Image 1: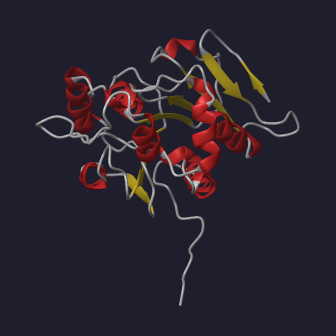
Image 2: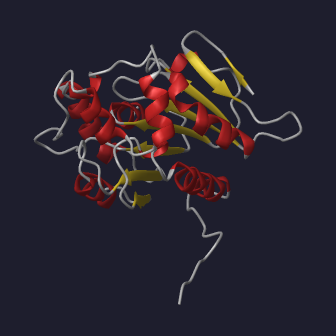
Length: 244
């Protein structure tokens, strides 16, 4: 069920018959608003995880007493904001979910973004999912052209500075292998710097990995990681798959 818990927040809760198994707080990326993640919110809440998507990075918008594990997530620049926020020594996060993370290096972010005003090009780099393309095209609240705005240098610097401060915090990184906005090589390098990172790359996936053609498989990957996180920060293996 969807319901607002605070100003500019969209939330999805598990059915009343299910005990909450954890909480995911998501920070959207450039041009997005909380409603863009309705499909993800409904899917994770059906698996008993509460989902709160914030339009602004004000984490004080959260309702009291969120169920653990408490995961901070972000897509695009939201992933950089999540990285920076997780390094706060007073933070209480149990894990991080980073999706389509712009490259974090000493030199700053690297992005091949579409030209401002080229809506078709923006759609093409965002997602190959026809349903999501149609949703964005009909959404008056979506900020077209925002993806052409460079990642703020101070945000990239804050995210870069946060990486060595995360310690053993479990991190799931999800990235499209065909992401032209933030090439996957940057996320591979970031994952290598995080001692408790799990990297999931999406075949032919574009920048909006949570809302791309493989959104069901990506959501399932997130749920599987959340279930592992519930057992402890060491992320014990729950399922082993072998293919001959």
